[in-house]
Each structure stands twice: as C-alpha cells, then as structure tokens.
Amino acid sequence: MKVLMRGVHLTLTGPLREYLQEHLVRHIERYADDEAAEVDIALVDINGPKGGVDKECRVTVRMPNFAPVHITEQAETLFHAIDAARDRLERSLRRAVERRRDVHTAGLPDDVAANVPNY
Image (cartoon, rainbow, N blue to C red; front, side, top):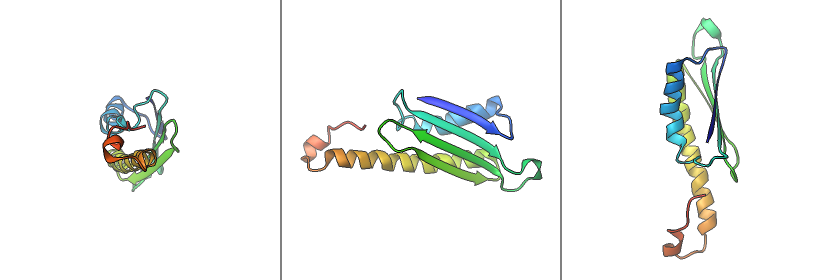
C-alpha cells in the first residue's frame, strides 16, 4: 500500500507523521492490503493562526476494483480530525468490502460462501 502524506498551510512534523501512521494507516491496512492500493492524506489548516474549528483531515483511498473513498473531517485539533476521519473511513471501507463480498457470494450455499476470500 502506498501512503502519501502532505500538509497544506502547515508543516508535517515527525510526531504528527507517527500519529498518522499509528492511528490512521494501521487501522485501514486490513482493507487496503493490496500493493496497488493508495492512501492520500492531506492535513489542512484552513484559517491559519486565526484559530477556531479550522483543522481538516482529508483522506482518499484508492483500491483496485473499488470506487475511490473520500472522507473529510474538521475539528479544533488535527488529532481529533484524524481520529474522526479514521472512524468514518473504517466504516466506509468495511461497507464497500462487504458489498463486494455479498455480490460475489450471492446464490452460493452457506458452506461455500464462507470460504470465498475477500477481494
């Protein structure tokens, strides 16, 4: 899986990159475990030093044979935005994989459908 991280109007520090890796990327690896999968993460500071609810986490996941999944979350801190984006992204990816599995196993006996791999 290829992971692209970038900061818009802010600098991605080492600890922030580690937080992204541990709290976002590791949680979605089980859904996007293909080498051709790509995760594009953009952290944005909308208002700059003015403050307010202006930190945004934008995540786009592209996997082979799936439509791209895009999530945007805003919060007061980058860490809250990352966590909220992770939760929404996990639900969306799980739903996409389950839909794919339901289509591939429709009409099969239960014992055979249980052995069909997740694609």
